[in-house]
Image (cartoon, rainbow, N blue to C red; front, side):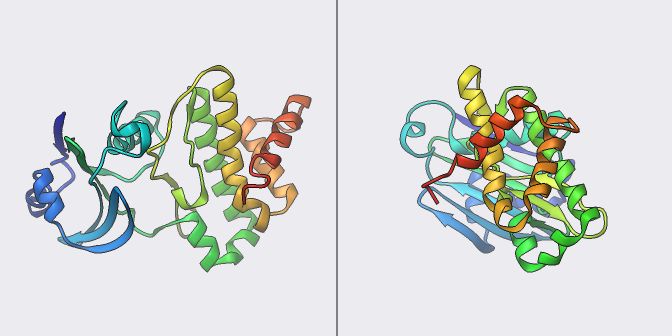
Length: 243
């Protein structure tokens, strides 16, 4: 399947030219951020704007090589779903695929840093109740909205959440190639996994009281129920023996 989309409404003439086709995108140069056997992420600047260019040289790992949607297609379709739900995500500049290759280009969000890096560099932010509550409320709302429609992120880690600095932080979702809709027991399992992914870092830098407050934001209640206690126990043991 071949498809390529460029959002000319948000791009300048030079960017449109650089991203006009998959072939052109694979010729773009920039600073490499990450690399794995099937993809690489680079940061490039065009006319004063920064863009993250994720290029795929394969459809995916294991089954995705032959079945289902490719990893890059899953990434852009999930971002479009987030936008449809009204969740914040970086503006999508271009996306598409042809055969086994594909690309997704997003604008860099000014002043945004992934949550894991942010608190590693400025751990004092976690001591700021006002700042922390704003972030937790937004992350909890993201998880609640996705789970309400049967969607699980499947990799909802701090490094996949962007947060802007300042007194009024804003949360953005990125990097969700493994997210999809689930049903029944599998959805219940994936909900636990999403919250456990968030707690995997939180348990080392936030108190149990703060983590419980996040859970209450997530379920939209002031007190936990018996069912909540069962869910929380599953979250706490989810990664036991795997860290």
